[in-house]
Image (cartoon, rainbow, N blue to C red; front, side, top):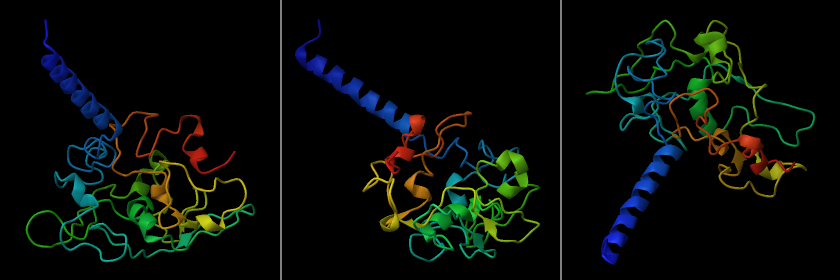
Length: 236
């Protein structure tokens, strides 16, 4: 027979294990996700993008020599885009997206514009402060063609330096205050505004990755089954 103290101890251990298990399911992190560009990462497409080091964080962040500017969390990529942007527009919209997008969305577009090279960073791992510009046969998301349709937001063609096309994706960098009818007064959690605007991170969490499975929840703030995330903003 277990004493009352032992029962309490067992219950505490079980609860702790459950919390850890749920945390690992909800936030699986970068390793093993589509944001893992290391040699062993699942996003490497047999070395197409990178294959040059084993540090998953370095493709976005660096402790030294980062890009300087507001809302740039030790960012390891240049946000000075050579090409311009063609932003989303619609006759039913009550606001106009910023052009260029706000910095917080440019962080995502520094890879997802389809032009920027995945492994082009400001500061490579190791001693010194040298840029990492090793290129493979497919170093840009846009190089993957139809395979990249769902992640190549800008659909930029590296061979055609035209404006990055954002016209067929959800608008970003739009002021919530200028919204019209058909929206909630305030987005319900976990959807969120970023300094009063709808940005990429209003719906996405770049660190909430899961090992890739078709139909799995990839880098979302929540499961969008039944359009739950859409209805966090849209009053339909």
